Structures are given as C-alpha cells and as structure tokens.
Length: 229
Image 1 (cartoon, helix red, strand yellow):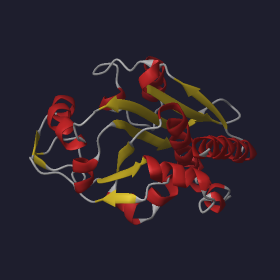
Image 2 (image 1 turned 60 degrees about the horizontal axis):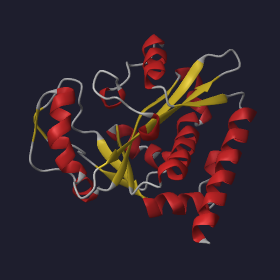
Image 3 (image 1 turned 90 degrees about the horizontal axis):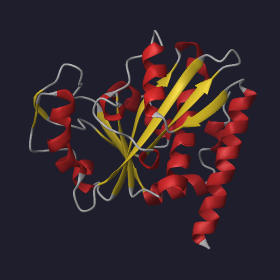
Image 4 (image 1 turned 120 degrees about the vertical axis):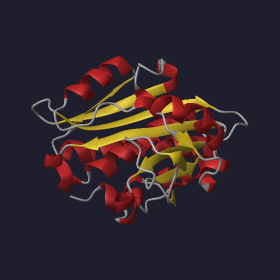
C-alpha cells in the first residue's frame, strides 16, 4: 500500500508541476537521446557546454540509464535543462567511484579523503546535473520547479537509493538547495590535491536518499514554493 501511495503522490506532484509551468507559459519535453541533448546544450549561446558525465565523448548513456528534461517558452526557445543519469554501484561507494572516474573526466588528482556523504552513497545512484535556467527566467523559480519534476521522474523510473549533485557554495548558502529539494548539503564535496581548471573545489555535495525522495513527494511542505509566482 505504501508503494501505491507514493506512486500516486508522485504522479499528482508531477501533474501539479506541469500545470504550474503551463501557467507560466512554459512547456516541457522529456527525452532519453543524449546526443540530441548535447546538440541542444552546445547550441545555446549563454550556456556552458554539456558537462562530461553526460557527454557521449565519455559515456554511452542508454535510455534505461538516463533522461533529460527541457523547458521551452511559447516561441520554442530552450530556457531550462535538467539531466539525470543512473549508475549501479552496488556495495561500492561514491567516493571510490570518484577515484576512478573524476580524473579520467577532468584530469587533476584527488585526495583519498572525501565528504561524508560520498562515503555513504552507494547502490542505485543517480547523478543530477546540468541544471540551467535562462537569465530571462531568473525570477520564476524555474530551477527549483524543474528540479522537483526531475527528482519525481527519477523516483518513478528508478526508485534510486540516492540522488546527488554539486552546487555552487553561494547557491547553497542562499537556500537554493532547499528549493531544488535537497536537504543534505556538505561543503567541499570533492577533495583535490591537483585541482582541474574547470572544477571548483568549494562546490557543495547535495544529496538525498530514497526515503527523502518519498517524503518530499508525499508531504506538502514544498507546495507553496512550487506554486510561487
């Protein structure tokens, strides 16, 4: 019964979010074609290129392992992106994965230490990244709303053990992590001996467990935020 209740809660939440976005004149597209995602992201003038964890240069992201959401306005202009990718880590924790993967993606050299969450996170793990909103929509809380939608889709699609991402320190301290739905935030998410040029070691690790995702879906404590104008 609990699983059915959670599915119903998530489905309703997704419907409410789509209504909220529609009221703002925003439509959404969900897709699993990561080559198309890269084409879209790299064609947007004011947006950074698609990040390495989602790039076809480094990973073949199959439909079962990833999805992305694009928000677009009434003229068809892309104004927001959210991307999710699943990794089956089993008993291996996130910190161990980073030792193998981050150097290959970014260069540099990691320390053997890591933030506490990275030591804890394992099992079915989803990376949430490339959260982007066009500057023209900065006052619409679009990043928070779209993140809630992406987290809801991930919960229904994968029932992950954990979802995580990185966030700029100033955004975390401003409360944006809470707007996105993340209740666990740790400073200095990754520890580097030799820092790659494109990595900011002050970025925070933000994460949630499955129970956090289910709690967020079932309770209405965020509903006022989602409907803010």
